[in-house]
Structures are given as structure tokens and as C-alpha cells.
Amino acid sequence: MKISVIGAGNVGANTAYTLALKGVANEIILIDIFKDVATAKAMDIYQAACVFNADIRLKGGDDYELIKDSDIVIITAGSPRKEGESREDLLLKNAKVVKNASQNVAKFAPNSIIIVITNPLDVMVLVALKFSGFSKNRILGMAGELDSARLKYEISTLKGLNASTFDAKVIGTHNDEMIISSSNLSINLTQSEFETIKNETKNGGAKIVKLLKTSAFYAPAAGAVKMCEAIKNGSDEILSGSVVLDENLASGRLIRLNRAGLAEILKPKLSQNEQDELKNSELKISENFKFLRENLQ
Ligand code: APR
Image 1 (cartoon, rainbow, N blue to C red):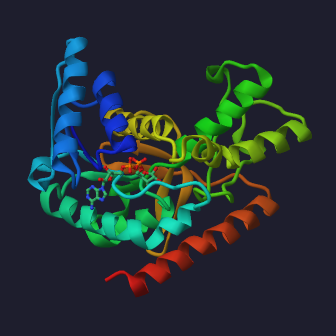
Image 2 (cartoon, rainbow, N blue to C red; image 1 turned 45 degrees about the horizontal axis):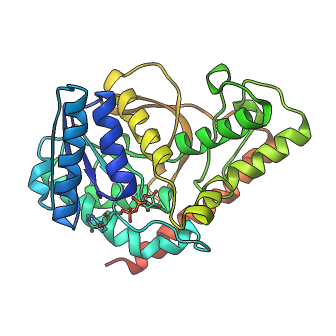
């Protein structure tokens, strides 16, 4: 399998590194506007793979020709959040980058599946849809696996539990209005534990930005790699991921993936209140996309 990663910064390089060490792909490409950075990081990761005698080829550069015949292209290019910035602050700036990347993916890897990581995530999924011209099943966004991992982290640390012993999934938009429902949890929590865990999870990204002065990258990279594994293996595993629900709305749902991309969207099992919350939070995605349609040349 050939996987290309656009953006060789924190998220992109760690995605390539994790893909290489887990052996998900045997060919990996790193693209960045900074050619030397992409070249050097690809070299370094290739050498790391050689430490483990992994059968893998990596190349980096700024030429999109390199991504030719990719099965999957992961878009991470764009700016991360700084302290005090919301993901929406990145809207127009990152939309230009994702537009350019998507057009190049359509040109050089027309049969690939795109996984977007650039924020604000759900809107960027729509930008990739519009400018790649790909069908809906070949455009995915990585956020749900990250938010779900943050939820698992909070439960694991609060309750002292091994994260492999329970399941927890987050759906909805990749912002503070994400939906954390007890119907997507396999363990029972008291109301007060549930509220604490919910708040901490919603604040999970911001906590890292505050300490690190930039946004997280190991867990986002892991989330994308997990989606690549599911695409490759076409297993029955249920993941959380951002998907195109109509041409003006993308948001997180429980999904199944296979070699064709999106195989199935599961209907959310939510209370009436949660359904209303989900619907309201998703209005903002469509509004932001409307703004982009009017302002993105
Ligand atoms: N084409 C290719 N690469 C680009 C472009 C472009 N048009 N514009 C920027 N880049 C590259 C930068 O040169 C940089 O190497 O994207 C990379 C971004 O890396 P970082 O600044 O380290 O940001 P990172 O932490 O990786 O976050 C990237 O993922 O999680 C999201 O919110 C995050 O939107 C952000 C994205």
C-alpha cells in the first residue's frame, strides 16, 4: 500500500513515522512546501525503519508527482492552533492550503482516499470534497478517533482502568460541542464522574496547546494511522470519523471503512436532547463552509 502525507510538520511527520513502524504501508511519501524538511524527515524515518529491518520505502519533497498512485493521501498541511486560538480562527488560512492540496491529490492520485487532519476539521473535509471532486465515500476526516482517545484517557486516568478494557466513542463536530454520550460508553460512570470526564475531554486539545504552545501531534497521527489500517484491512471495526453527510455538512459519526473508503455510517443512538445538541452544533459547520464558498477564491 502507498500512503502519502501532505505536510511534514508535527502531525505529518509523526503520521509517516507511525505508519512506517507499524508497517501499514510499504511506500510512504512526505510532501511539504519546505522541500528540504520533507526530504530530511523522510530520510530520518526511513532510517528508523531500517533499525527495525522494516521493508519500506520513504521519499520526501515538494513535488506532488511523488504521490502518484497513492492508495491513501493524508492532508495535514496548514497551521496548528496557538494558545488562545480556536480551531475556527484557522478557517480561511487553512482552507487555502487544503484547497491546493486537494487539487493536487485529484491531479496526481485520482484513485486515492483522502483523510483530512487539518483544522477546523469538519469544514476542511468539505473543502477537500469540493476541490478534489472525489465521491463522498473517498473523503474522510480524522478527529473522532482522537477525541475518543482523549475520552478514554480521561476515563483511564480517573478510574485507574486499562484503556483496552472498555470502549468509548465521541461523535459530532471536532470542537467543544462534540457529543459525548453514555450510549457510546461501555462502562458505567456516576453522573458527577461523567460530567468531569466530559469537560476534561472537550478541553483535551486546549490543555496540550496551553502547555506546549502548539497543538497535539502523537495522538492525531495515531488516529489517522488507525483509519488507514481499517481501510487496508476492511475489518468490521467501528471507528469514529468525520464524513460528508451532504455537500454542506461533514461531521463525526460512527463508521466502518474498507478499501473503497467509507463503507457504512451508523445511525447515532442519542437521546432527544443529544440529538438537538448535535444538530445545533452542526449548523456552525455549514455556516463556516458558506463563508468559505463566498470568500475562498
Ligand atoms: N503545502 C504543503 N505543506 C504546507 C503548506 C502547503 N500549502 N502550507 C503549510 N505546509 C506545511 C508547513 O510547512 C508545515 O511543515 O504544513 C506543516 C504543518 O506543520 P506544523 O506547523 O507542525 O503543524 P501540525 O502540528 O502538524 O498541524 C497541522 O493538523 O491537527 C491539525 O490543527 C492542526 O491544522 C493543523 C494541522
